[in-house]
Image 1 (cartoon, rainbow, N blue to C red):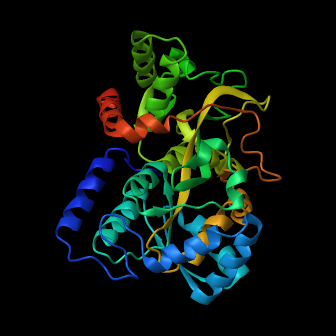
Image 2 (cartoon, rainbow, N blue to C red):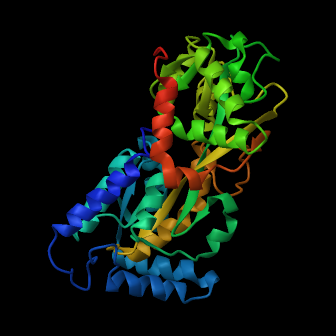
Length: 374
């Protein structure tokens, strides 16, 4: 589940500022300096790798990382994904992986506070896009210029970090309760009274609300038309807390349709035998699908910078196949992956949510005020 993220941006910056103001002097050459500085050791390792031709960078990173012997990963991956990813990496390179796992806000807060105290514990971060954007703005992340970057879709490339996976936003439905042909064919369809009492909305999905609103406004609708559509949607719905809970209720037939869920969650439920789908029988869903990026960044002040670089590179190459095996949506083209098959991808509005996410949190809360919980 994604808890509320976007309103945390200002708070995270304040936490970092206060911790820095209360901190001691500048760290020594092997530690991070306050305010997002790197370390001499990490700088040298990153520069050494980056100076090589791209086809030689991986080999040097492996050599240096093996001498470091360990990697510290902070991540908001679910436990099963984090376990599988860290085990595969460790088995391939013989480098021990220490994992701190928490929700995206906890990962951000811990990293920011440790950085301000000059006691950074992470070498590499893998988390949701708002948190990665904050870490980038705090100048905690180092540049990666490896060859694997060329494999990533343009929508997954950001300053100082790169998407490893996407959470694709689309409706999902119970195939026993929604007859073939009655599935929604547009976001507008969710406002149809025929779905009254059948619809579930996740209580913290302000990014979905913003993206659909932005799409409608930039494709010819007036603000009044947009507002009327949202009123129709919430009139049909009850709220649920947590995407996994939504999927469970949907699979059990306690709800007929999720107004939005991540396609990988729906797909996992389907593979577990639940009568759910996000693509109709034709295999093609015309509804605009927004790919929400989750990504990776290596810390400027990493204690194991070569291992951080290697893990970053691996997550964009061999690690992509591991993600696909777990039915997640990769940021690169992976043989055998059908995550995007029949899906109408449109850009996810990263810019607005990065700059003004808290406003959309408030608007979404206002929209759902008075809607019954399921």
